[in-house]
Image 1 (tube, rainbow, N blue to C red):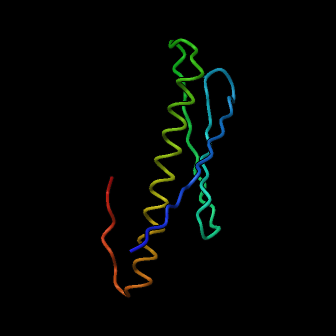
Image 2: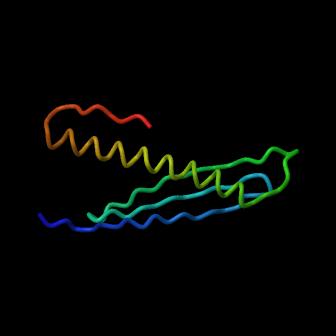
Length: 92
């Protein structure tokens, strides 16, 4: 049996809205041409030190988590369409 290696490239972009808020957008383009996008946001408490990289990590993690949930939903929809039954979602 031959296996084909498939790779996905995920893009993350960040925007510092101000010195307390960071937004992230995650996007993956699947081999069928479908693009899935998700957003994440981080807010710094006013007494915390200004650490932009930490805001990016939190906002990025939240965007990636949302991206993962969208991919799971998409996969279950495809399972259901193919099998004619309702699949049980994986909760992460």
